[in-house]
Length: 122
Image (cartoon, rainbow, N blue to C red; front, side):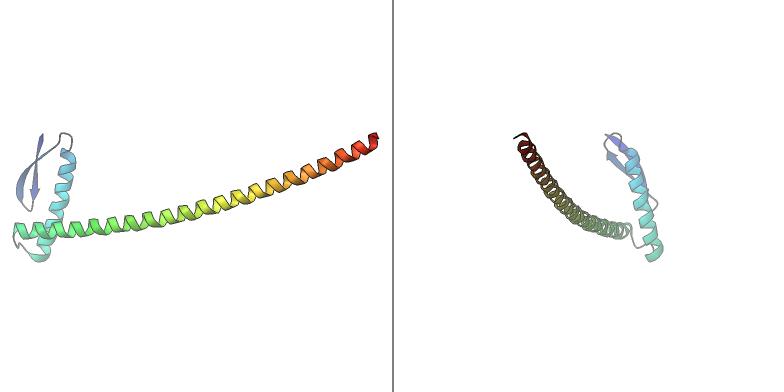
């Protein structure tokens, strides 16, 4: 297990993480530090715990909003794909009917030609 030291609002925190996750944890720590500093500038130094809770809530709110947007977009894309597939199926059925009709007409012409040829032989 790896250890990482991150700085949040001027205080050092030692955290453990899986090997290879150190850079990611550092980036996440930097984002949290930026959010805490932004809140501290806005509300003042109201205590580390309160700033961390506020940062956690605002980040959770953003995550919730993004998740909702992704879900909404996924639903729209699914509906569009369903609509497109139904249209493609309808077009394929139409093409199948046209092809069947053409084959029937061709078979009728072949039968007429065969009948004419049979009449000429007699």
